[in-house]
Length: 122
Image (tube, rainbow, N blue to C red; front, side, top):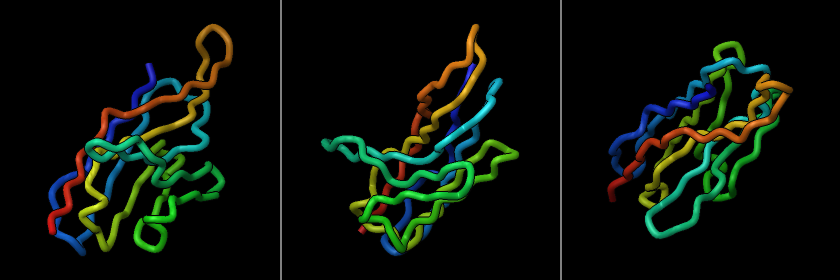
């Protein structure tokens, strides 16, 4: 069974930094793309950043210049370096991946992690 496990969330003051990690496990043939979404209280889930296996990135406008996504394809892990954090960044951050697996036939699964809470104080 494919799983995504996030870590690295916590409490940080405005202007500080955090680094999130997400490791995929299971019998995985491909992960493309892989990245992060977030959901703040009372708001809809939104894309934060994604990266393809070849390094093409996509960021939401509100985090450009502050957040950096990276991947270690060999370890099936994605990271999100978050700098200059703002209170508006407070949310549960979810790892997301499009995963190719063998389950009878070849299948593409949309997989979500359990989430890690980031709280930015003012």
